[in-house]
Length: 511
Image 1 (cartoon, one colour):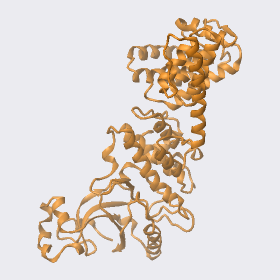
Image 2 (tube, one colour):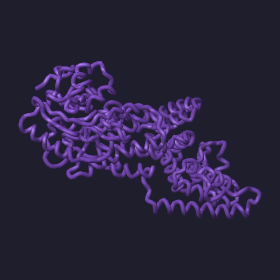
Image 3 (spheres, rainbow, N blue to C red):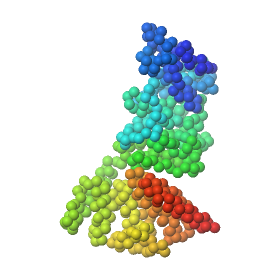
């Protein structure tokens, strides 16, 4: 065994070849990573400068020879003869992994019973440096595509390699500008013979470990890497891990809600939420993520389904335009290539025209925009066909329902309800879709959706036996959160009062 302190000055020579300059990482479970100078690459004329290396900058050292990163396993991981052979066998597997988004080891050896790996030095550092920064949409998708591509390569090998410790510190920015996974090698092989002789099945960093990693006798699986990737993305974009330092264990215990990630597209947020799904089978594969990142959309829509959706929307909008051009000559028509916002505004004017044909055409446009997950259209459609809970607007939505021949009743709180349960269910589904998408571009709309669900689930008309009481408080929490995000602190405070009263009502109901 070795004492690493013997090799940390300019006179020490690790394995007779490497001069250890400074530690790059000492927080791993089994090994330390050192920035080193490969003395075999230092010319004879520069040999006398080695003694002054402690006073040199990295740029000056780099002029002397090749700088590398050495991963030195700690003394407790010293190998016996059988362990040495396993190390060599698995290094051969790792050595043959060639991909632009993987940091490829260039050498390995065993020095005084202590194994070590030699890797390229990435002087731009790890993605830990990115945590909490602001990103453009393209920058986020590039990070997702690069890391997912590396994982997809590992998971597609036969047998697959499971990384087991995906986290920001293990994603480096290489000299070519690509994000690349490191530390994917030893003890990660799945299938065949492996001993996990450096780490056991629960190796890794807890904050990035999926729920199944905390169960006994669970074999390493690719889906666990996906969960770690979701936690990594969440931390980089928000500055904190999604479920605290206990990771998937805390998620399984229900200690934290699914994180809300502001300042990103709905596609990115959906992707992260799916990566963090509690059940492994509900997570996307690394290849699906990489494909989605290339297309800048998640979930990835096939060209055919996207083309059909766009064609359907174009037909509906065109029909509405023709009608509107003939019936409302005094207003300029919206062009078929108009933005979703323009189409929505046009539909809003049609549906409030209080002529049945106009209302039907306006609703048809809302239907199409809702299929394309345009949040304001989803909300307006839900309020048009479903229960209306805001007294000031009850009359307007009541008229719409009559135009659409949706029979209504008024409950004892004077809320307007469709008689047919199917319309209530459709409205609830639309509100739930809005909250699932959590599109940070529309915080006020998200608030309205969450608040609508508190009113529906809390209604005696809909919930006479208390079946849905458990859903009221979580939706109040979401409504409060989105009210704050939209800058309406007064409403957030008012909702907190509503929440307290609802909590008391629920407790009284139990009695």
